[in-house]
Amino acid sequence: MKQYHLGIEATLEIIGGKWKSLIICILMSGAQRTSELQRRIPGISQKVLIQQLRELERDGIVSREVYNQMPPKVEYCITEYGITANEIIDLMCSWGRTNIAIRQQRGEEVMLLDKDSEEEQN
Image (cartoon, rainbow, N blue to C red; front, side, top):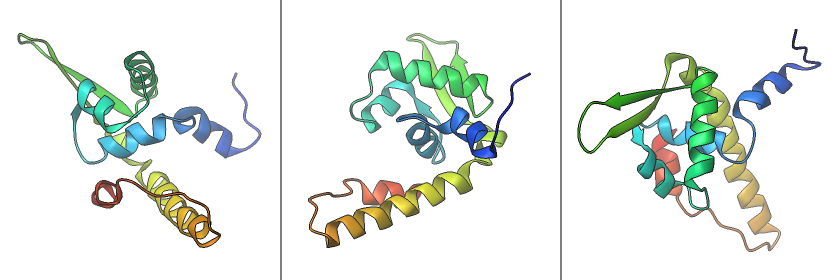
């Protein structure tokens, strides 16, 4: 039996890490192909992206649809269960924007590159 000391441990097990929250955030705006996700997440390798998508699929957050056509087409979308993470993701995005503004006020050279895309997802 798996045991957790705090509920946040279970949350971080599913959406924690560098990439999963970004993937969920992007999929909240609609289904995406693997190549589209990779373009929208600079720095992620195809291997890591597919691994993260498989883990999110295993955990019921993301579903995968394979279309029977040539060339093959696969799309990922957020599940009904995955949508329940939207509130958490929105809070993380909001906190991040505030954090960036505070750091800028302190003189740190930091910026949010894709403000428009982030706002349309929230």
